[in-house]
Image 1 (tube, rainbow, N blue to C red):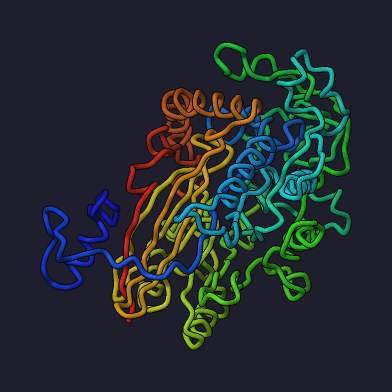
Image 2: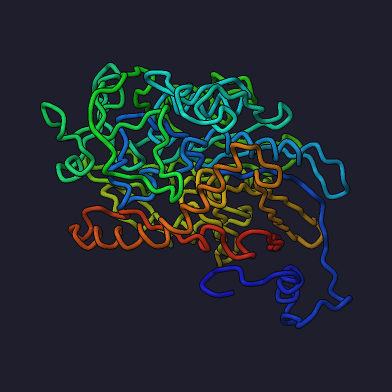
Amino acid sequence: MQDGRLRWLPGVSLCIIALALGVGCPQDTPDELPLVEGEHLMRFVHLSDTQIVDQESPARLVRFSPFALSAWRPQEAYGVQTLDATLRIINDYADRKGDEDFPIDFLIATGDLTDGCQHNELRWFLDTMDGKNLSIDSGELDGADRVQNPLDNPTLTYEAEGISPMIPWYTVFGNHDGLASGVFSIDRDAEDPADWTAQLLRPISAIIGLHRQFPPRNEFNPITAFSPAIITAAKESANAETLELDLWQLRAGAIAADADRRFIDRHEFIHEHFQTASLPEGHGFTESNKATGLARYSVRPKADVPIRVIVLDTVPPSSRPGLPAHYGVMTREQMDDFLAPEIEIAEEANEFVIVATHHPSADFDLPYFGEKVGTQKFREFLATRPNVIAHICGHTHRNFVRRIEGANPYYEIETGSIIDYPQEARILDIYYDAETGMVRLKSQMISHMENPTRLSAESFRRSEIHASFYASVKLQGDAQLLQGQLEEGLFAGWPEQIPSKTERFGLESDRNFDVVIFRD
């Protein structure tokens, strides 16, 4: 192991057991140290960062795409189809009846369900989960005008399969669910959400084209009838050969307004999760969440299994208007008033704990003007709790696993995104052996490409090209150039760090691993 990273492949569980027994790590797998399988407690699916996008929304940073990977993607119009194709694979795993094919007890989506914090994007995500017919088109419904084979047109009405009614699913609040373009704070002081806006700095407004309207503006309003960079459902935005967005072909001008593009807040995000046909009601949120608007909760997904999932909200509750910040924060209030008490309650009930957040804990050291808990303190706290076995998260769009050392080690597991390459989810199995105190975590990556649909295969093709060229070559240089021009500390954590294609995929130990930890 180096820098907390898993570095072992087959035989790792045996090695850890040997170390725990004080006999050293064997060079092979001798019969006298057999792996204790343990009782299978739970199987669940972890997926993240679907970022369902209204590609026609005027509240987008499309012209900023040379500096921010998330501003525009050649595969973005295929988000619903990619999510649904992933759900089809999950349903298939749930239906298998082999010796090692356990039922899927639940699914958890760790945030960034939407791309632009819009009501219509959230409904598209929820309706996909419910298996409804939906059309990923806003404003003027012009998807049918696209010069494309209807079988290849992602903007036409789509019949989703949705998640199996036998699989309950839970949700987490992400930065794209609470901030404009995932980075800009939204002024929600107006009584009518139609009047909510996101302020931008003047240089950014000028780059993306907001100054081209009259009078010039320095804020986003998604329901406006003007777009700084018009993209419609009727026109393919990417070059057919290179998949590159030709910024010179984009124009600013009038578009069809759509009231359903309005910004949402935590209250509406929570309330919409009660307007679904899939289970459970609220998808983790309770009546208390509806009343308070706090996007955090604790749930025992399988009543007869002593495992509790504690879901946290790591999106900054407030940030400086106009300054982009997509990173996460662990507020002192959430740590002291919610996380710590919930872990203690679980410990008293003899329950293991899985902590779920959108952001990884590495973000917690980034600047935040309120009271917070930093990365090391957060990790140290979890590693003192004997019942915490894992922290799952997303946000980075990469597969990455770290063992956090301490009196009671646990694993922090980042799972890549559905919107970006390699467009995968993760199945996690948990075993427990009461006699030895062993907890075993087993991970298996799954992909819609195991049995792709026509549209999801096209989405994957585009995402791979995007990751191979734009992320690793073009954007890296442009983002570094822009970063050097910004005042140090002003744009904390932004422009975003751009993982390479290899980093997104992860090492084998970040993907399909089988490890154990010991608990008394």
